[in-house]
Image 1 (cartoon, rainbow, N blue to C red):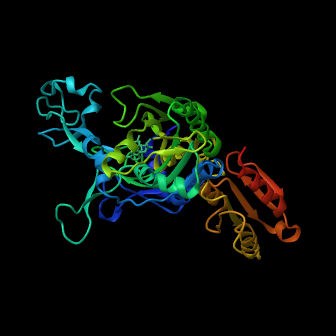
Image 2: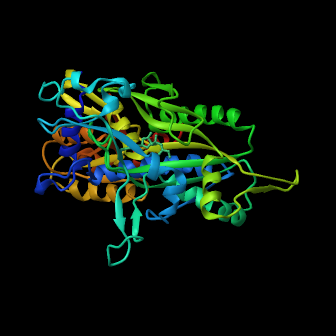
Image 3: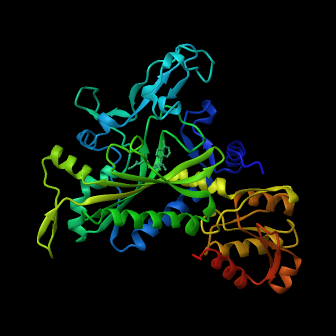
Length: 443
Ligand code: GAP
C-alpha cells in the first residue's frame, strides 16, 4: 500500500481536510488551514479528549487562558533562557538544520568535517548556536522596551498561574487536574512532515496536582490511561503505538521523568503525546518570580505543601495526523481510497443520495436528510453517478451511505451501504438511525 505522507497531503487538499496556509500567495511555511472536513474532525477529536478529561474524571476541571500573558511568566518558567534549539547554517547553500539532527551528542562533533546534506560540501556548516523558539510581539501602540510579550509556546503555564484561583473556586482537593485546549506557537527551525511539526498548533494539556511522594505512581496511572485513549476513542491500531522514555539529554528543563507516546508514521516512530513529571519546578519558579505563596493547604492533615505536577500534553494537530495516517487505506481490489475513520470521529456520518434526479426521489431524499440531520452530521448529494458519490465519501471517511430509490417511495425502505465492506442492507429509517447510533457509542 502507498501510505505515504505525499498521498495523504494530496487527499487532504482534494477532500477539504487540510491545506497549506495562504495558498494563493504561494503558501506560508509551516502553517496550515483546516477545511470543512478537517475542522469537523479536529472538533470531534478534541471533544472526546475534553470528555475523557473533564466529564469522566470528576476531579478534573477546564480552563481557557489567554495566549498572551505577563512576560515575567516566561522568565519564571525558564522558556526565555532554556527554550532553545541548536541551529546550524550552511554558509554555501543557506540550508538550516537543527544540530541534533546530525547527532544527539552534537556538541562533540567537528563541524568542519561534516558534509551539508543539501549541497554536499564540507567545511561550510557553522558551529551550533542557540535559537529561542518563542515568537515575540509588542503590546500597545509603540514598540518600546517593556512592551514585549510572547505568544505562548505551551498552554501549561496558563494553568499553573491560575491554579490557586481554580482550586479555591471549585474547592478542589489534591489530587486534582486542570485541562486546557488552545493554540501554542513555536518558531521551529525546521518544520516538516505536513502538520506534524508546525509553527502554530493546538495543544490539549492536563496538569494533575498531586502530593509529593505519590507522583511516581500517578505518572504510571496516567501513562496507561493516555495510551488507551488512542484505540478507544480514535480507533488507532494498538500495534502502531509505543512508549519512549526520555534519557537525560532529551529531558526538558522542567522534567524529572518524561515518556512519549509514539506512533509509527510513514516517516518513522515519532512522538504524539508527552507524559511528564514536572515536580514542583514550575510552582517554585512562579513563587520566586511573583512573590506569591502558591502552596496548597491540606486541611485533613493540617499541612501546607507545593503540589507536584504530572502533565499529559498532546498536540491536537498531531493527533489528527495520526488519525488520518492510521485510517488511510488503498482498496486496490475496488480501485478506491478509503479513510477508515472510526465513525465516532468521522466528520460526516452519512451521505444521503437519491438514485436519480427525477420521479420524486430528490424530494424523498431531502425528507430523509431533514430527519437524520437532527441526529447526526449528514450531507445530501445528487451529483454524479451513485458509484462516484460513494467513492467521494469513502475518501472523506463517511461510514454510511443511504440511497433512496423507487422502492423507497412505496415501502419506506432504503439501502444502507457500509463504507469498508461496501455491503448493503435494505432497512427502515428507524433501523438506519439505530445502526448509526450504535456505531457512534463507545465499545
Ligand atoms: N507542556 C509540555 C510540552 O509542551 P512538548 O513535548 O514540547 O511538551 C507536547 O509538546 C506536544 O505538543 C507534543 O507531543 C506534540 O504533540 C505537540 N507539539 C509540540 N510541538 C509541536 C509543533 N511544532 N507542531 C505540532 N505539534 C507540536
